[in-house]
Length: 315
Image (cartoon, rainbow, N blue to C red; front, side, top):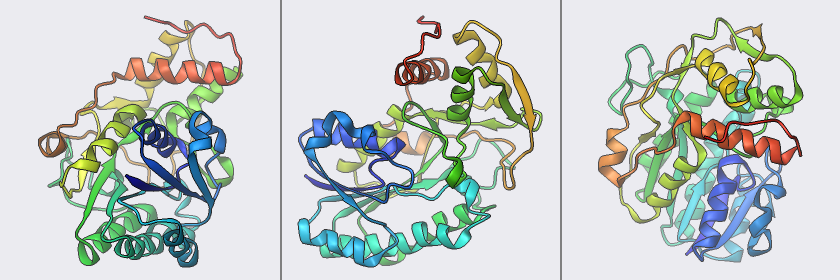
């Protein structure tokens, strides 16, 4: 297949790029390098056509039609949720205008399938576990714009799949202070390997449904050949507190992780847990990586990436 991935040099998309290349597909990546780096796809870089461009620019996106027509377009670009309160216009450009641009490109590519990474933070989280029948209640511009992008697909297009991601973590995920990108697990791992205290916002009782990146990529791959439109939630069904994550990290590195208290972010979600039966029924997907195994793999990547000798539990 001919496949376009927007944001393809980023954390989740780079894993997908590798998987698609190894399957024998032709892959084009559109990335503005704001939160992606070419080293993320080093193992397959010579087989990928990388275009430096912005999904929010209609000219950039329409120029992609010059290279080829696409069978599938993965819209995986995003603007950090945590920064959307400060810069809602830029958030809209990426998530809203970006979707309109991608729909137009897909139409010019003979109705290419669009696979879209939306956000589970759209839901009202007052009644757990959340499923696809739960009410939508965006609390940040990011959530609102993701929801609008979904609605653009429903209004203007007919060949798509929408996933609403839980809290994804894993290797290659890095904090980006310039963009306000502070993912929970990546920030904790960085502090552990620098020997600095881990910041726990509030009292640490807030929970997340943490899903490992390899599991998410499994779902993105399955979507190529399934007709389910969604939205479908990608999570584990397990509710894990920030304090629980600290405890598991302490076990894995054989020492107590030191913490310091931080302030809760605006729009932060108190609790998160998902019922993921719909995605299993529709495409046969379930998360298979336990949190302990996922954290171990993530720590190993941090250790290898920084040439560190930190002792990590291997069993």
